Image 1 (cartoon, rainbow, N blue to C red):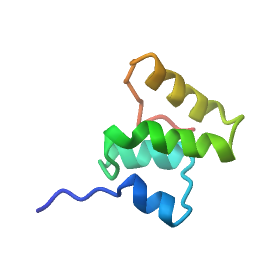
Image 2: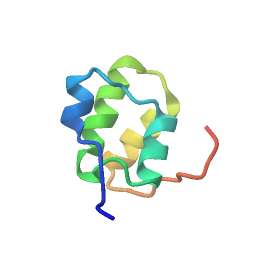
Image 3: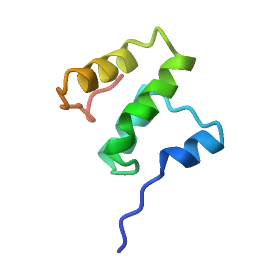
Image 4: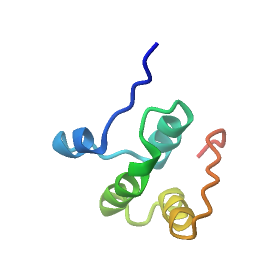
Length: 74
């Protein structure tokens, strides 16, 4: 079976903004390319600037601390 992922360009083109929970789900099921994760989180923060889970994801990306717990309940 071929690996399928949703490119950031598709999300951007269709104005899809993911919540932190959706991002964690997409990471867990490898639905998004991790190389585009920073762009996805950045876009989500524009709509949800006070979302602590998104801020935590952004901070982890900035600090190259790339452990993301996809099992936690937000």
